[in-house]
Length: 138
Image (tube, rainbow, N blue to C red; front, side):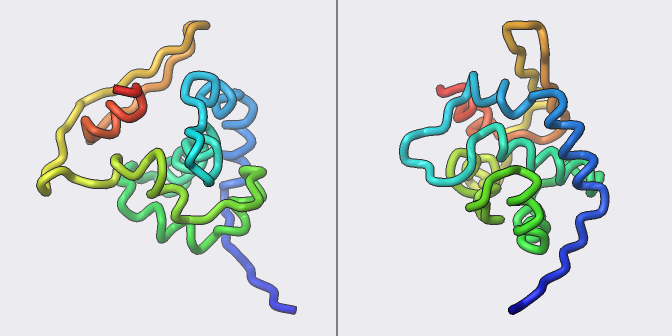
């Protein structure tokens, strides 16, 4: 039997706060999981990305896979996704968000996703155009 201790810090509180907003379910309503993707739902993946951003106080996502690999089992438990893998944050529906076309990122200063009930999610900073197109299905 092997026991591994993972440093979760503030992740349980952050995860609970995100769950209380029902954000992952709202995201899943608008962006359903694609039939070939075997990883977690889009909403749970975004929840994990938000947990990283809020916990690490860092919106630069190029370190997110390394961060997640250190706490993979804890994230799987917090997200209620038993098959969660660190690579799920940088592959599948989000792969284009971590690649720079021709070495340069197309930037948007702010991206706003609005839901039918008036709720909105704002993302500030560098966001690739291909990532935005993929989320919007264009």
